Image (cartoon, rainbow, N blue to C red; front, side, top):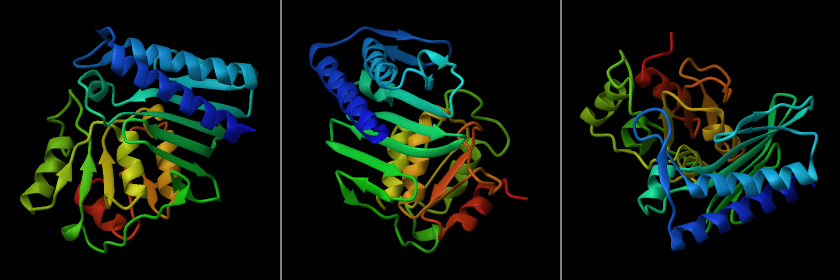
Length: 257
């Protein structure tokens, strides 16, 4: 029942994304630099939330644009109606719908759907991860020197000590390829699919990573904070890897004590 709701909501929101991409949309800016929001973000969010409210009216909902709809429930839906809004607003097809379902503090299910590339990633706790219904696994690279990494850069606090620029500088000076796609949810799914060997970012919100981190874990990867602690989407730092290079990545990022 929950899986049906998750898939239906993801597909409905993705259809709305495609419709807006064809007909055009208004763009506004939230607080902060390049913190864009579009008509499509709000429309996608409405479709998702209306469906969840209709089918599970007593569930807690946390969504990027509307915030929290607090309910006394064991279940929480965590929604990013369009992850990669800057990409979407500029016609770059690296953006997606991301929806996760948490029960009693544990992520149980997640879906990430990029309709532009027709890629639907899904995971259920204990059941593995899939891309378009085919099982996916993380890579088998065994050292960072041969890895392909992905990260995200904020628009502020770039000069913090051991921050995004410092870590990026260390990797690229070693000749290690580091990409920046502009969608954390897609970054995580591409680690799960073995396209990247690790993803790290200094400051994410729960809706950015809730679905994607479960997909990585169910694909055989490992996800922690920068100290190697079990990952929670309610704290900002994330390192997701194939697991093999995880300890080395923690040392390279430089937060592990």
